[in-house]
Image (tube, rainbow, N blue to C red; front, side):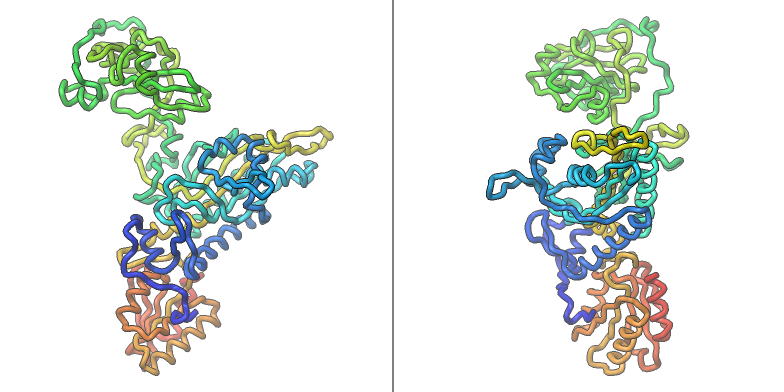
Amino acid sequence: MRQRTLLATTLREAPAEAETASHRLLLRAGYIRQLAAGVYTFLPLGLRALRKVERIVREEMERAGAQEMLMPALQPAELLRASGRYGLYGPDLFRLQDRQEREFALGPTHEEVVTGVVQGEIRSYRKLPAIVFQVQSKFRDERRPRSGLLRTREFVMKDAYSFDADWDGLDRSYQTMYEAYHRIFSRCGLNYRAVEADSGTIGGEGGTHEFMALADIGEDTIVACPHCDYAANMEQAETAAPDAPVSSADGAGVPEPVKFHTPGIRTIDELERQLGIVPRELIKTLLYVADGKPVAVLLRGDHTGNEVKIKRYLGAEQLELADEATVRAATGAPVGYAGPIGLQVPLLVDRAAAVMPEAVVGAGEADHHIRHARPGRDFALAMTGDFRCAAEGDCCPRCKDGVLRLLRGIEVGHVFKLGTRYSGTIGAAFLDREGKERTVIMGCYGIGISRLLAAIAEQHHDEAGLKWPAAVAPFGAHVIPVSAKDGTQLAAAESIYRRLAELGVDALLDDRDERPGVKFKDADLLGIPVRIVVGKHAERGEVEVVDRASGTLRLMSIEAACTRALAYCK
């Protein structure tokens, strides 16, 4: 490709709303352009890089035995209603009607559609197992599209689906996809972790893992142990059981509860600041409404409640913090003074709170708290469990020797064990060896391809521009004659350009009539892995070869430079 005709205008400044490095640089380097909030055009450079990522994904999917197909983006609403997801997606779902006023949606994922396909195509155990995948645009009406390609309303996704005769088969398919994902992200040059996760709106009956690209700007918090391979997202992360035994009910050695006056003091920060009470000496009582009924969750004062764990324990569909009126009705006190003693709603006690010998708690009365409250003596421990978010410095729940760290990550892939979540509802069944009808066992496996491209850019850049790994770069080499008016340099550059083509290396030739400074700044911005600079040494058959990632520069012969570029691209 000759840069003079390339549809890519570099920008010296990015729009003010471009806050992340990937968003700024992909805009400035001419890879993408915004059409509307969360909707982007891929210009030639961006599309070439996107296709490189897609190629890696396709190769690894096919290596894993998956077959590519393509399903419609337009989905009948009744299909989503059949699975219960039409309402579950809420305002995130793009809805529309045809001229006969039949309702449709733009596909956020394709579990229902692919299950319907399998229902008609696979009727015998002889066709199982099967894995299919597609690469296609998906649509979600994000409340706040932001960060360029990291959170958009239209995005490119690879979604794959496995179909097995039993759970053992699903375990094998899941492991196959799990290993394929590791190969994909490693080939893309990504620094990532596979973390245990919650299934969210996709649902399912088994395990699930998210693949997280580590990045400071990531929206997700990852809990990881540096001592072993344990990692989970914050919603799913376990906490190690406390070492101390659960308090006995007799309360030996602990004084009886004492109520004391705390006028206007509602929060833990105020208790600490005004009375010198350390947060870990408190038990806070949080009032929730679970499927319309109030429930209290007791946590140590320095811990945070985990609503996913609470919902899972209760088997609740909906969970939200109680409003002020509900708190007053359930506790008899305003917000900030609820306490567990005498409370007539179910008490969920976190394990760390349950083992405290005593604590300060709310009194269930305005402007009052209670000292010397003892778990098990003064309030019941019938429902004790892990109800909090893991915290930096917690002991690892797996190896017990490691100390958990909190990292930030960008979700780029997710694998689910669906079980019969969709096949049971939609009716995908097969005949087993005995001729009995059985429900297909499913898994699903997604990669946000356009988001993955942005995550790679987020990890591979410097202040000057992008630094693409060779596997995903739009071009393998960037050939730059320093002077557009020097015949020797232009001839050498053309020779290198042709030689690279013979070697199978995609090259970008900067044949523009621009100053050297402009060319070099643009080259840094575009981030092509190898730069071959044809300058004053061209007369003796030598050029400068620059490694964009490391910044190293070497003077070598033209043939050696071409060989070097070929080695980078392998």
